[in-house]
Amino acid sequence: MPVIWLIVIVLALAAAGFILGRTRAMQSAGGDSRHLHSLPTYYGSNVALKAVVPAMLLMVVWLVAQPFYVNGVVSGMIPDSAIADGSSRGLVLAEVRRAADGLDNAVAQGAISEEFARNARADFTDVTTRLKEAGQIVTTQITQPVLRAAQEYRVINATGNMIMSGVVILVALLGVFWGLRETNKDFRARNVVEKSVMALLIAAASIAVLTTVGIVLSLIFNTIEFFRLYPASEFFGSLTWAPSFGGGSELGVLPLLWGTFYISLVALIVAVPIGLFAAVYLSEYASKPVRSFAKPMLEVLAGIPTIVYGLFALLTIGPMLLSVFGPDGTGWMGGQRAVITAGLAMGIMLIPFVSSLSDDIINAVPQAMRDGSYGLGATKSETIKQVILPAALPGIVGAVLLATSRAIGETMIVVLGAGAAARLSLNPFEAMTTVTAKIVSQLTGDSDFASPEALVAFALGMTLFIMTLGLNVFALYIVRKYREQYD
Image (cartoon, rainbow, N blue to C red; front, top):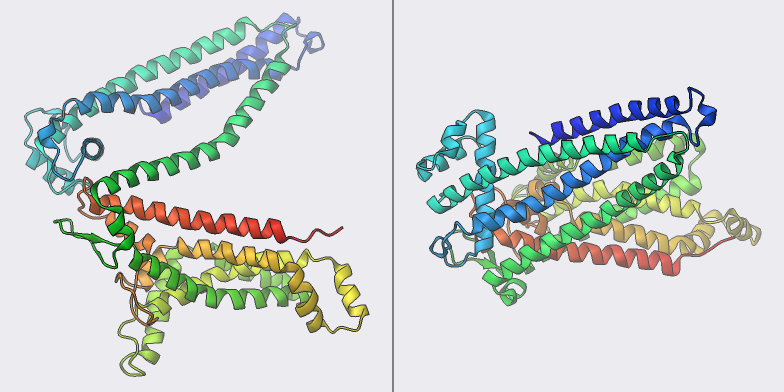
């Protein structure tokens, strides 16, 4: 049974339990709610919570634990001879899971039958061809041990999901009966429900923390796996980025880091002055009608998808720059994809980040400081330069650093506007690429996922994560340490 239908059934049982619990509470009070300890709604909510919470917790634990069990069983089916040199059992298991998911999707699409997917005598070459025709991502060739393990993986998963569905529904029913049994006019339903809701709120607040931990652990484990196959000294020390799934790759991260910083620098050169000047104008010079129109229009830029900025860079900015700096002009620019193309588009995207945050920070400066400056004979421009901006500077610096971390993590604008060349160069009219663009290229296409050329994406992601995390922490430190407190 699909998980979504299982959730619907549990919620339906909870709704029925709510109605039954409320009715039973009213019956125990002789139809007069004044004889109840709590409102009738609390009695119904108590039954509903006892049906939903244990069942959902069991389902979550089951879904988390089942893959570990299945991986342990399937791992024993893979002989050591099936693990190629330069690979590992973990990478082969990842390919097994990918093949199993491909079989599931192909069956759902009708590309292959369930009988064919489970056929132990199926030819692995034929299976590989059919999965690729169905649009599933697999390696160049599924081997016979991987196919057999994938088929067993599907069978065990299907059996586990069926057992899970029955057990979860049973637990939900037991929860309904438990809640109904303790329902009577003297039961303190409100106290129980409020404590349960508090626990649910704490759990919801913990999801963000646990998600972050999960992302970090995923990056760490796959990065460790990569460095087992590829030397860390060459990754951080090589000046060449030349991946080759056939072998002999040079995976130096320095050209990618340079492209990331260079494109981000061009973007900040565009975004910071324009965004800061716009913030000063909107907060200090613009009338209320102008501000009420200009500020929302400026912030619309933040809502435009980045793919649109990428197309704008490719179809508008690039040709425009090529007409000025290309072969017919100065001859500096050889193609429309270049650092300056992506940097200009990204800078336009970052303007609302800088302007909106800076505007809020400038407006937070107390009016008394402005009035004191005017009282001493300073002009408006002198007040802005010598009073307002120094007072708001820590916040402005924090806004710029946050915009920098946003620029470092950008992908689509770089892919469409900057090209794919990994090089170390100071020429802004040359094509370059970034860490995020190469993460995309290494994990798409017909790739061998049991290889360092694919796992390098996780090492790149870990490097980028540490960089952006450091910038965000530094921005928060600047804002908190140097923020002025006004009464």
